Image (cartoon, rainbow, N blue to C red; front, side, top):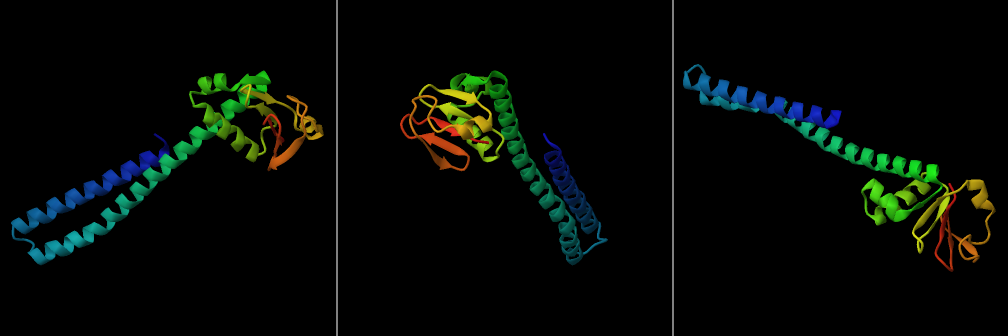
Amino acid sequence: MNGNRLFGVILSVAGLGIAVIAGLWLATQTQAGALEADGAVLGAGIAFIPVAILVGVGIFLYVRGGTESQQETVMRKQRRLMDIVRSRGQVDIADVAMELSVPVTEIKDLVHQLVGLQVFSGYINWDEGTLYSMQAQELRKLDKCKNCGGELKISGKGVVTCRFCGTEYFVG
């Protein structure tokens, strides 16, 4: 559990603790006759303000911590994918998916995210299911597909696709 989630839980529990203590105190004071019903209602209303603030901020931090945790998980997967491809130069997509414990479709998404961040350059042959790491300067010089020799065309920011075999080149 990350820091924001833990702090959110602590704040929520503290808020609920204050609510219980205030409720018990108001109930005992009313029962003992030291406080009338109108005073107890006013006291409950006043006690509600810090309780609502603590619980509200606690819930916000808990949810925000969950979002940050998901983002950290994606960044970890991206880093691992980059390390695997750069160290090996060429990898089978199914093997990488198994190593990262993710579906093959998520590998495609991770690669496109890395291309969008301009940190990955290489190419992928979807028919063979192979991902290649390559220097960006070498990719910029390409005018023919390394797989089939077909003409390459720009298909997106940092992405060049062979219109014949579908091989995608990522220029980071």
